[in-house]
Length: 389
Image (cartoon, helix red, strand yellow):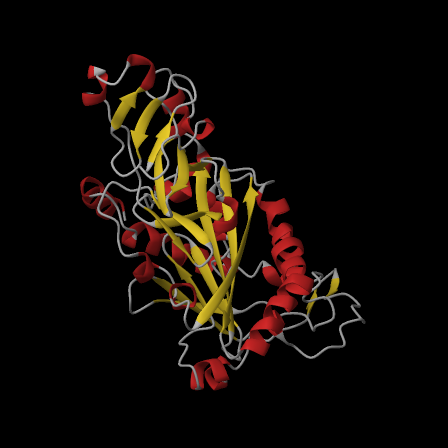
């Protein structure tokens, strides 16, 4: 009965048409926590609907299913009893697993010669630490090279440095990624955020031109035309008497003239805004020395971890010190909390159902089609996805 109800769920129709799974695309790396959160004790996390324990031992990282198959207790409540061996021991009866391969190497309460140790293996996961984050691969295939799947801003920590933080949203990951498809919500939702409060109204009624990236990883969105005010018959003008907007467009407000920007001409950055698989958005500045990467991590069907990864070009010790201070005193609050939480409130209030899409949703429509046709999948699902798309 539950399966029938799910198939008839009208909120699934836009995604089922492109075979976009509710739990996300597993054949990708996802950041799950920041590096500083993983200390001496094992930590339980959740990714793609699975409970996973991550831990360090002798400087190495390990990830296993967070369930002892003996009596079902969480391994994350246990400890690395035998330091330097890469193992973790269940707190209930001491079943001890090798983090490198998931094999049961000892059942302490059964004694050293316990035959059960030759019969039990639990799932282990590829795990990496990079750019101040712990990354997990939840897929069934051989993991790709992490640096090849993420933007240069995060991959190349010699040229850039990253400052990550995250917030958990009580919504499905697809709603968050749809939010990044240049649907023009920012011009309305965020117009009174601290970043944009004193800047002129962002252009709306834009024409969006989605274009697949040459590397096949995602799409770029070119914005054409648009207005900053308009008269609506019977209602009046939008924006309505916002006299306090005295600043010139800058930051997010300065979205015009990218072709003539330093980012494009000096640093060779091809686009100001891109969305990448499996679900991340890149938004740069015209000076080319900063880019925000937001990444939607599917925790389960109803929870998404939104990583805000602020990336700065290394241009000198003094500038790096200023960038870090600026983030802690302003940007971390103004964007990663206030600005992002404006989206969080709305996405958590979404009621799934039939959609009536309009001109402003052109980017969303193009992105859904691209995602369904190009996302990495296990071999057995590739043909099915192609047939649906």
